[in-house]
Length: 108
Image 1 (cartoon, rainbow, N blue to C red):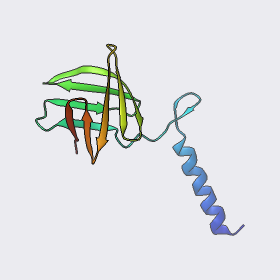
Image 2 (image 1 turned 90 degrees about the horizontal axis):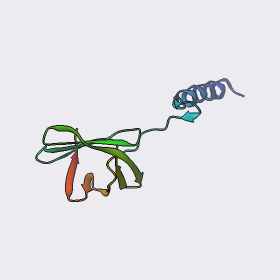
Image 3 (image 1 turned 90 degrees about the vertical axis):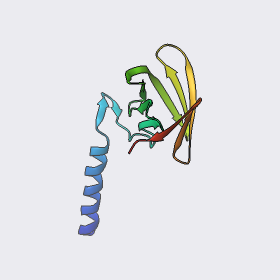
Image 4 (image 1 turned 45 degrees about the vertical axis):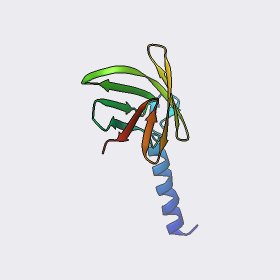
């Protein structure tokens, strides 16, 4: 094998090993979904953070963690499962999150 190919393979092995850091024993850590992050209404009253671990936290009118729960993502569709037992849905279209009656924009 040529030396440059061997170096490239070695580099790939190092990158693969670092990409498989463990967040829980026996489970490789995966890259966060592109929709992970903070989403905010235009008036700033509602802030919804989609966390990389599949949880969300929503602040309303300055009340931190007014709603919390888990979410799943299928393409650009989001299903929410609130800790209080209710469910909701959302869809990301053209960089805007339409969550039930809310319109949220990515915070930069």
